[in-house]
Image (cartoon, rainbow, N blue to C red; front, top):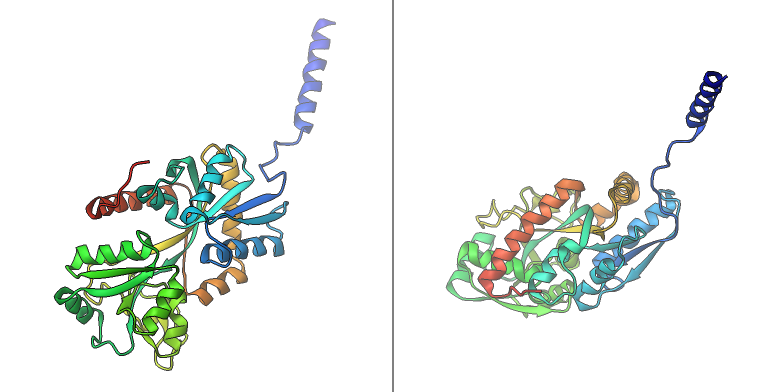
Length: 331
C-alpha cells in the first residue's frame, strides 16, 4: 500500500510539474518612462520621441511610454533621476556621451556607474565647417592657418562635445583656437554663416541649412569612413563627397557622439536584455531608417559588453584630455 501511494504521489507531482507553464520572460508591468537629458525639441528629445512613436506604432511593448524632459544642469537632472529610480525597470534615461563626460567636468550629483548601459543606437558625426568666403580650400590649409594665428571657432556650450573636439585638434596638430561657446549648435551655425566666427564643429543637421544656402562649407568629417548618404545636398555635393579628416591630414580620425539609453545599475539583466531587444526591433523599422538618413546620422548599435567597453575606452580618453586642459573635477 505504501509503495502504491508513493508511486501515485510521484506520478501526480510529475503531471502537475509538466502541466505548469514555463516562467514568463520579463516584460514591463506598468507605463514606461523615457527620461530625456535635454529640453523639449533638442536632439536627444527628438531621439526619444521617435523611439516612443515607433514602439507605439509597431506595438513593440505591452505598455504605454511617456517622455519626460529633465534637461537641467546640462542634462545631469535626468541622470540623477535615473540614479534615484533604484531597481525600478520602468524608467530609462536617454542621453549621449554626456552620461560619462559630465561627472568629469562638473559636480554632477551622480556617478557614471550609478547607471547601466542598455543600448547605443546611432552616432552623430562631427564636421569641420568654415565660412564660404574663407581663404583656405581644404582642411590642411585651415590647420596651417590656425598654427600661424589663433582661429576664432564656436560651438555649443563650454567643456562640452564641441570644445572637447577643438582641444583634441589643438593637441593633435598644434593649431590654436579661441573658442566661443553658444547656447546651441544652431546658434553656432548662424554665427558662422554671418562671418562672426571662422569655423565650427557642428554635426550635419546643425549646419545643413546654411550649407544648402551657400553660406558655409564642410571641409572634412571626423569619422573613419565617409558619410554614406549619396543624395545631393547642394548642386554639386552630397555628404559622401566630404573627405574624412584623416584623408585631409588631420590626426583626429574619429570623433562621434553616440545616442545612448540607460537603466539604473540595480536593474537586473533580464529587464536590460528585454529593452535591448525592443530597441533592436526599433532599428528594423522604416521610420528609424528614414530618421537616420534625414538627420545624416550613422547607424551603430551597441549593447552588452560592446557598449560597456566603448564607454570605458572613451571615458579614459576624456579623462586624459581633461587632465591636460585642467577641466577635471572630483565628485
